[in-house]
Amino acid sequence: MAGTAAASGLAATPARLGVVLPSLRSSSPVNEHGFVELGGCSAALASQPAQRINDAVDAQGRIAGGAGAGR
Image 1 (cartoon, helix red, strand yellow):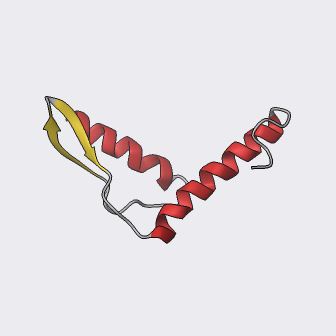
Image 2 (cartoon, rainbow, N blue to C red):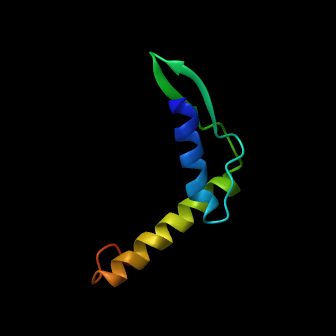
Image 3 (cartoon, one colour):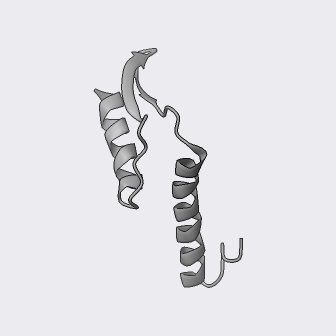
């Protein structure tokens, strides 16, 4: 159950940016803990959330007075 909740939460975040991670799913527990399989995707798809996260960090840095800007 914990793996399902974690996978759903992790999938929802990039989905807000219009990015769907196709292989993300919950799996059987490991050592009695929820487990999430991140799977694989194309390099182009993997680059999308990375770029969006970098853009958000840069924007936050500009708002906060420059920290994180100009990567």
